[in-house]
Length: 153
Image (tube, rainbow, N blue to C red):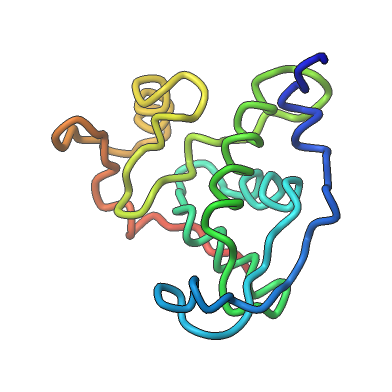
């Protein structure tokens, strides 16, 4: 069986988005309410909207998705996976526009080393856009990232 390309994975809706109740097991961490499992392309579209010189965290994307669907939270696992797929599809070059995936950070302003090119490439791209990136332990962190957060309307 042929392995799917990143672009094929990005375009595979799998009946998403879905809004479901937060399960009892999940409620210990996330509380009560509903969770949205987004479509991969929704994550891609939000990632594409981050302007040069700005950044967002994956949690900002999750919050925007939850708001869009009237849910309490955006699924942390699916949103993270779909962000990785979106980043990889954007550099794959199979009909998907390249998006500024390097502007999407982990919690605390940490660069996501799983995105294309790894942390070093993203560090360079962020520095070109005027961000200051510092090494903290084995990770790279965008200094003062919270002052340069983009807002999703």
